[in-house]
Image (cartoon, rainbow, N blue to C red; front, side):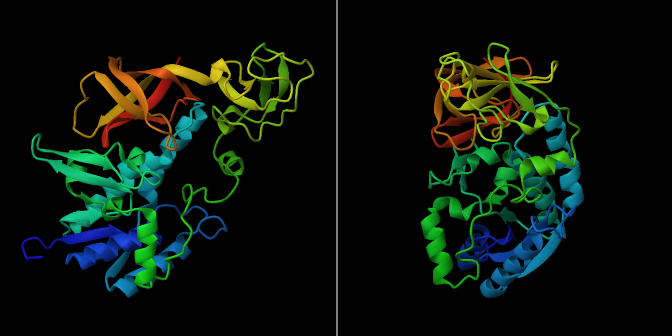
Length: 371
């Protein structure tokens, strides 16, 4: 690497193995690497559920092994204003938001990027499984899926725009997770075998309902089946999401065959929320028609290229862990619409509909309605 290609890169070190290997790879390439640990939550930082203190110790140990500086930066106020407040608004409105999408757009690639630039960084890097490619034909920076299909995180990054993509590196996006673990073991990183984090820090491993209960007003109400018969009581509509099967507190029904899609012992699924009547509507059977959608509309669209792609045939994900589904994109008031030849299961308002052209993530929007 020549002096002209050597860059000052600020890496978001989370305490996990992916960001640790990211920092190591960049240093091996000859870049000047600085680590930043982002503290995004502090309301109950000393509780058993929030592991930020442990994570910082792990991140500092990694920085020591790799031989880079690390700085602890508190973004908790930004997080509460830009991510958590929106998260609560969406839940209160009966939708199911994705805070990881918001956190990437507002904190990791905005507040963190701004801070890194103030430190004289030319690029930032994170341990996300995604890739960035400059397309000389269009002059655009493209967001691509990570090479490991089981770990690809482009879905969570779809709101990144050109200025952010131009400044971002995703080294582990070129690798499979098994290779990342192997590298970590090989260089004796202290967190080489650390379990991957799940969920978001402010919830951690705690019961989700218990956490939301502290912040959201709720009113219990009826749970009804598709025929309007009361089959149970809910504890507040905000605590349920479409497609949910666990935690409904409903047994079988007495009439056999009363429900389409299953007999009396078929499992129940949340299918609809009636906010006006404060009623949760449930159906039996995974393949019940109420759980299937051929069309959705999305709002608050964000496109990586800075403009919407041309209407036509693409693929989309309506939730993170699903295969790409063929669809047709058309314009719609305040956003866009997607038509699917094959029905999509439990499409959920508040979640993201993310559009792909092959491996290229084009962007997406927040699901507003489905039919």
